[in-house]
Length: 248
Image (tube, rainbow, N blue to C red; front, side, top):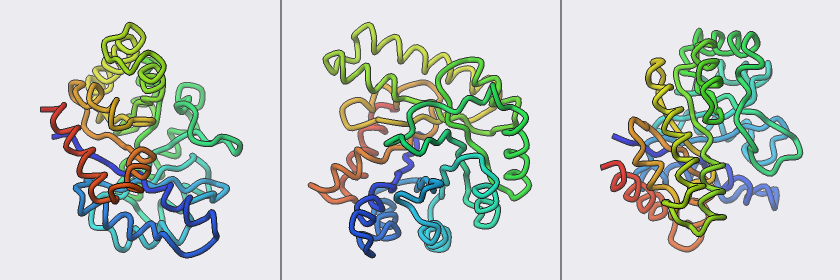
């Protein structure tokens, strides 16, 4: 059954805007859990722009559902992950000037480095995911480095959906869904778990949730934005209902 991982980075973004103690990401994680989240995702960035080290430590100790730590494949981040041992570590590209992650990790161009990172994380008992564009060479490279999960970048699909009349049957949207479908099939054929995420929201999530074999969607900004009006627990509940309806 399809699962929902809720990214709570932007709860920390709001807190860091005032350099204060609220809203607390741990409290947000509890509310997300009560709303039906199957996991919690946070991205500990090198510049610590939102989530802080202490947030991850507290989440590791207090969250009762899966913790997915997004991170760059740097020695510092690998050491933090190996110490805290989240259920999953997702390797992502990271740029200091980007507002959010702008594209998938180029696994094919750095296989040796990433193979070592995946091995270190596996030795610590951590499942490793890679966030990649929906391209077959990247899927194959993910298998080569030993990743157990591929999260396909749904940003191009979401942007096409928004730009082309919010119509899931438009040619541009169908083309992006086909890329995700083909890549997802390849992920599963190579024995990895097929996850997806990035820029998914309440109007575009269902066609992705309906893809064959997709196991988990990671969604953050849309849920946190909706929570301003309905509360985080309800925002998670609504998203989970849409996903389950489409997957069913």
